[in-house]
Length: 190
Image (cartoon, rainbow, N blue to C red; front, side, top):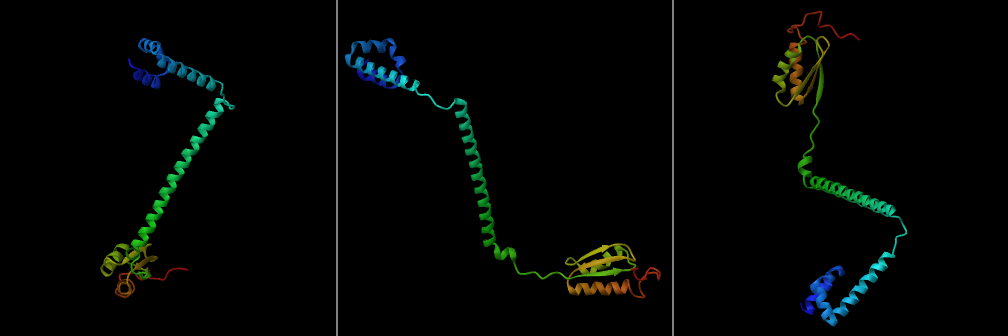
């Protein structure tokens, strides 16, 4: 073993391993390596003695509790930061889509759909639905509630469609051609 090999082992190995046979033989035969070994061993023992005399003023349980509390605070802080980042990204995404798609999403202002309520005296719900479906088509809406003579038909459609439904009800529900018996065609009680 050369001096360079011995010094590289001395630099990396703990002092306890220096007692091995081949290392001990080289240190005993080389005065330079023996002196370096003695200095390293003395310094290591001085460090061990110095660190053994250093004690904390706080008990180990308190130190562990402080460390655990700090770790919890870091976790809460990390979760809080992640939540804020997600909320910020969501808000930015919402604002960006509102700005980018503003013209498409809002579109032109739509006029409110006119609505009118009609009293139905003698036609049944099936008859009213069959007759009004012809006049309303797919764009209008008819809601029938109650039973004759207190039935009500609510129509949401264009003014022209509402006028056609009104004339249909006058023709089939309110005129002499209607199939209402005279007792049923009386006005509603107050």
